[in-house]
Image (cartoon, rainbow, N blue to C red; front, side, top):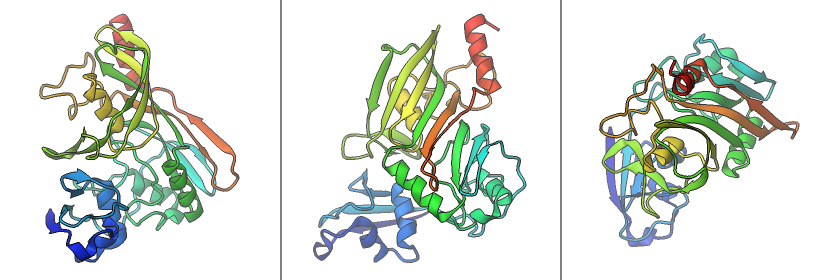
Length: 309
């Protein structure tokens, strides 16, 4: 891991953060720096900022540069559960345990490599190591994911995500009983200053705005079955927001506290599933809506909580 510490000088005040860094950090393109900023690897005065942040004289900027996986992604013949496919988009139902794109510790066996084998035309769409990937699901989260097969589709879908017009609904089982039937969690999320591999709710100005709508579906003893709808798409957003309320998702050893709470049946991942996805088709402009039923692993947990078996 390479780390760079810089201080903004007076003549540079007012420049965009990404542009300012591109002129001072050797070997990194502006696009790579934008990705590092988006992933929380760049801190300005200890806080995450947007690439468009205008730097101020005297600000301290820390850059953490993780090593890149191999530049060329090799196609891998991994089975995909295809929900919909046309010449522009591919909608898949991702199982828990499958990593979306290569990263530290996950160079092979990714959904991105499977997509490249299934649809070779996605090569170069959105980047060589994440062909067509416009949004992600955590490794241990299952459910619906849309992949762009063309540059037109990639541009359209990323624009829709930024505009918050893509509908993403999740089903989850969380520890404890939620005190209200529904609520909006509006708390900024950024890198945990004590552990760079984790995210955390951060003070205002030190994280990016994150909004999750949650609704209780069923109270089940010491657990709650709920629906979560994303308005924004921050890393680990639902997991972090629920944990911040004292209701971590079942099976979440990262955000479940120092002593992870037990789950009564083997879960094989998180009790978190992306059940609904809707967006405007990049070419036809028709509204596309997809649904995915709960996987058997979460149904087993619910059955046990409801009936004790």
